[in-house]
Length: 296
Image (cartoon, rainbow, N blue to C red; front, side):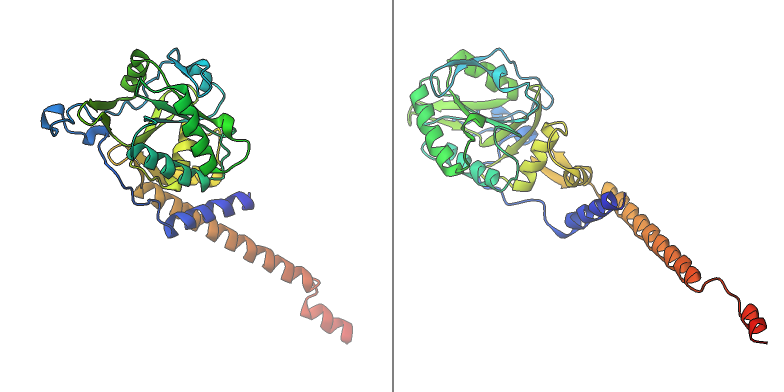
């Protein structure tokens, strides 16, 4: 009991002493902040993210993995692990590679094990791309990640246009091809999915706070991963769809602070009570009058 109370107090102290967020670079197009198509610049009318929180992603969508094997999206779910969904394309000249590098950097800071505690599924939304391109991208990213025996936890997929459309529509991811540059305009974000294929949250940009990423994975896992400190953090910080970050819930922090104060006072009173009892037993329970009689 005392050990659990100590962990709660430690978690509260960490909450109040450390910042939760890191600066995020890159386009913040996404969620309900995305303006309607009529208000977007030319060439970006169909670019953005419409958040579909709690929506179920179809599991029967078919793709090919980096080895060219036919797979279904459901193959990467149902194992009790959350999934980070990354949508991009392998020949992207800049943004997609920056996002992957940012994701790798944040994952390195986590104590969770890729392939054991969570999975990552990267899907190309360019139907022209091939499994060979996916394999080349995977070799580069896994080399950057640098953790042994994690290759089975990160999957790089390609597919047909109709398959890609089914997935991107399910999570609200919108992109647009520019024939002049032969490139895609798209948002930069990752999608957190639960083990039963429901959308849990969106993180925007090309760099992700390790704390936010960890909390997102714990919440998406439905508490299958993480520890008591993560539960304390999730009690005090809730996901904000407007920002794609975890923000402080002041009322919950005040409640936790009050509980911590009560625990400290209870422990103090308990220690003082025990000390008083020991001092009484140490005197042997002999009154001064009995000592006087013995002397006379």
